[in-house]
Image (cartoon, rainbow over all chains, first blue to last red; front, side, top):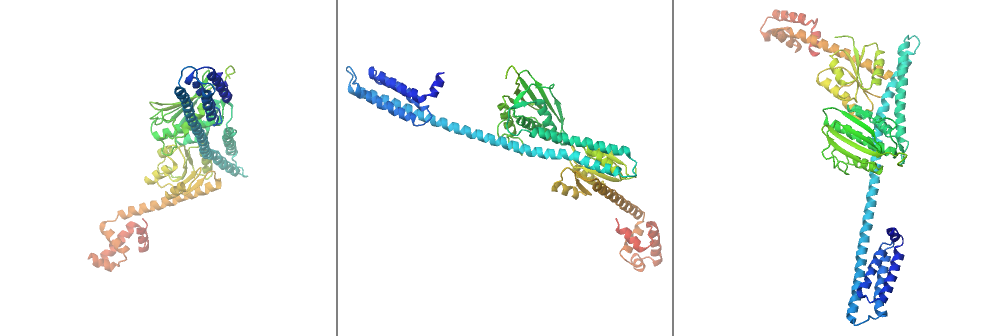
Length: 357
Length: 199
């Protein structure tokens, strides 16, 4: 309350304080003590937005301090030199307050600028992350769409050949045609999942179906996992899971990152089991996603989220840092644990129930 | 071992494998499909035919299988297929002797033409190899002395020159010569020299 009042009218309050102090100073023989409240007025004025308020009020206080000496002679036996020393000490206190206040103001402004730069940088990196994600997605989709296309193309040619007059092969023809239908719908399903993923590109605040996000990303990375000989197992909570709000694409980006890292960790290890297990748990207040891999594990679980920390030769050390900042921006937490046979990454997202909006 | 040329298909994608298998069957040869390089390696024992091989596969890739077959001296012609063939992969596949590299998706006619070519290439190569092996076996049956005469004939020496060099009668050289011609199964000197040049 007082804080808010101070923040709203710093200059008015400061001038009012100066006036009160001046009147008290005029009417009481307090010597140097009367000037002390002026320092508060200076501090108040320094918190006002324009930079010159502080020095102006300080100047005013100085003038008033000296003016008092001229207007009301000190009573009693106080010697003149003591009065002057008193007033000088008061001036000193005011100017020191002004100096320290100005220095602090400057430091605060610099910190604010630095924070702004960091935020800008982070936005840039998130953008870069998304661009590289798009590139990887495009490569993966090209490969994944190519398979059904290759099958359709061949089967259609085969069907055409079988359909030529004088070829008594009804059954083979039917087989080729049903294969074409099946593979076309496989391609269409892939296209649908791209569309689902691409529908929103600007950060949004929509209800997210976490299970659906996991399924979409797992499907997009299927080719990559398959090619690396990795099996991805989904252990999802029963549908529908509690709703959570945020940017679906960003959450999918986090999942993409975690699964891709898991695949790379397994490939790097080479031998041993090659399984990624993704669990979703629907708690009362939070949804929990766990990505467990049987890869090389993590040496420094507490450092993996640091920016520019990477163990990959071609890595930038940005993926997990961005992922964690995305999850935290959604009100969740993210952590990493190294287990006996690999690594476990998990994150939470708050559930938006009706009773706790 | 079946002597009928077989088309072997190795592709991890089930749908593509089914399509390739149906396509191969149109040529009238038996077709056998495998989901991985390892499966193929356990089943394959230098049967005649050709191999349709996908490059991108989990576990051993197509290029790795091709290299292994080459290292093991297995000379089955390979039609490589790939989702996207960059220059590096194409060069590697062709350097290792692939018949061709088809980029998915491709047309049936294209595939069948290359399969025919591959099966034909395997047949002629096997023939050449068999002939060479046969000649080697025949040459191995010669005695060292007959072999000596054979080398001299190949060097273009006359019977008289040989007789002088070997300190034999011309008659004896003629005998030896007739014997070795019979053993090798050659009817003329020209044929004999051609046999020697083949391996």
